[in-house]
Image (cartoon, rainbow over all chains, first blue to last red; front, side, top):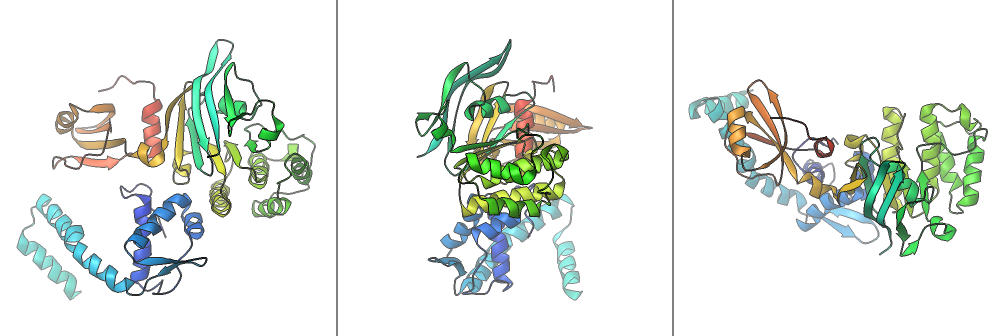
Length: 122
Length: 287
């Protein structure tokens, strides 16, 4: 995993998103264990408090949970939940950004639709 | 809560005032970055905390007890100094044994395993080590003493990229398995900034920042865009400095990152190193 330290996105948010991606892609299956705070912080060379903050984001969203004495596990139904959330965010994160950039470049609606169709036909 | 309290320390060398009324706290189980330019007073501060130098005035307390000439209190503190103070002709392995006599909590097995990770030759004499290995022997010792407060003065001096990387990983691993207070004084700010939790910045003998890193990072940002638009936007703001590149202007602004911006301006956050440079630069004549 690669943390972008230059990014405007805080490191703990990047950690949370990376774990979410891994859960979405089934790299960490439901009811399986995710890496520990130590493993994550050593791998990314970040303060353990930062890694903990990232994991706590997922605990608050009920994506992972703590098994006492064992570690953090992916909650059942996590994938479905994440899919739903990402779909809801799709408009904000991609469509709005796309329209902003299109405006700068004087691309109109037809141009954009044509490009999307080109993307699908590949 | 356990902590090292530094109270109103002042220290002069002849006419040079190295520390001027410095007060700062180092709390239990946190990783600190101690940042300052050359000659800012970092090493003087660390030397006083570890009782290697006497302050002209002020005091250092550990859990309320003065550290000065108090061996019992001082056994909780270890300092990896910039200078190598181990006897010159001593072999690496003997340096470890020697240290373990002063610090009973020294973990020899751990020291040996670190030595093999850094490929440190245990039979070599201390004065035959290269600059890099001179740092490594001090590092390995500091990592193995197992005391609640460890100060690292320039821990990665002369270390290649691989070994610097190894050091940061080992520090984090050790810290998360068995938390302790680590105070890292370094000029490699970009490298250390994700590792530290709290920043103490010292400039010309004064503490200029003593805050969690997150709070420091939220105090500044850069605005880039056409010069006139930038000037207009920052007119009522506290600007640390400017860069110009043709008609493109960048302003380094202190304050919270704005949420609303004119279309033609771009905002980016400032990293710790940039903040540090801006905060400790002698006021340039700019604009």
